[in-house]
Image 1: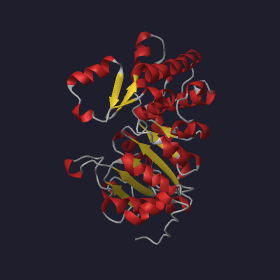
Image 2 (image 1 turned 45 degrees about the horizontal axis):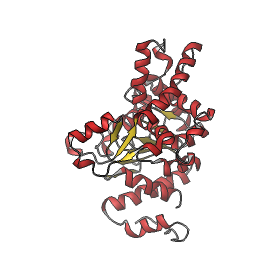
Image 3 (image 1 turned 45 degrees about the vertical axis):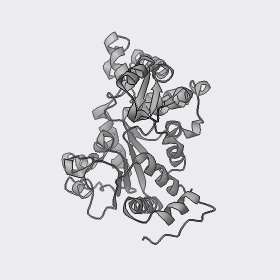
Image 4 (image 1 turned 135 degrees about the vertical axis):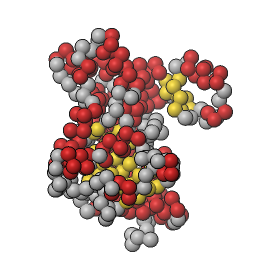
Length: 333
């Protein structure tokens, strides 16, 4: 056990509970990863958090937003789905439906959800009209305006513009302090959204390009431009302060940003840029299937992403349970 004082149950009940009960296996891995996260920040480090899966629909903003406000997270890489679904929840929360018995739904019941325009994410249904089409109307106006001016922005920049304009505030159905994207927009947090095209709004954007509403397909910046922006941010940040990598889930949200270091070293010959200074992944991917998302951290040493002395952690568990606990402990709750 690492030498760290146990939190007072009065001042930090969540932390005290976890430190007392989480002693072995994945529970102990959670505590170890948290202690190294805290040590990384205490040493002046910065942290990039990656969001895969459906973390926004899981309402991770309840804890992640405060992490952003308290400077415990300094950049985010997320899927297009997580970018948009935090806003969907922000304006349409009261129209969501929970389906706790989703495992026993019949095909006919699924068709009924389809006919009611309720898009299911495990046990939660996102309402198309109140959420997706509502935000489409707002962002389409931004796309068209930028297109006519010959301006180009990243997907997250369009969302930041909408949030900071205040035009959605009358439609908020949750406390905006529980929205991680609102917190990120207010701080102008560096953000990278690889593969944005694989999202509801990405599909809608393609449709508006096909329909001719947006004339220049490049009005929304994506892909390679995000990597060049990430390379600029990492090259500027890492030599001044170690940058950690906290990965929630797998897929492109994690695979894309971690590759920036070998790209800088091997393709741009910037050998002086440091490796990632901390690594933790919450995952339930199976290593033996050849899954990169399930690869143990040491494999990343062979790709030039992590060093042999980089603090490395894998917590094989449910991120919707683990991430809020880690964030709570980092926040001293």
